[in-house]
Length: 81
Image (cartoon, rainbow, N blue to C red; front, side, top):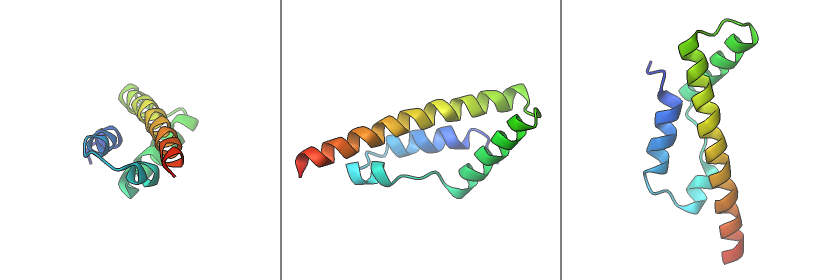
């Protein structure tokens, strides 16, 4: 498994020129969700490697960015209605 999966998945999605509706509806793949769950559990158990900690931090940043995209897409759609 490519452990940069979550970040790459988000970048691929954003660069696919999604519609506002697709941005709002986007959810990470099951494998990405599983990987993030693993990393979060490892962090809780103080068992993360430095590379895993970096990966989790990158996921948090990408997730925060995607959240902002979703909020803006929702607002834009509301103003168009």
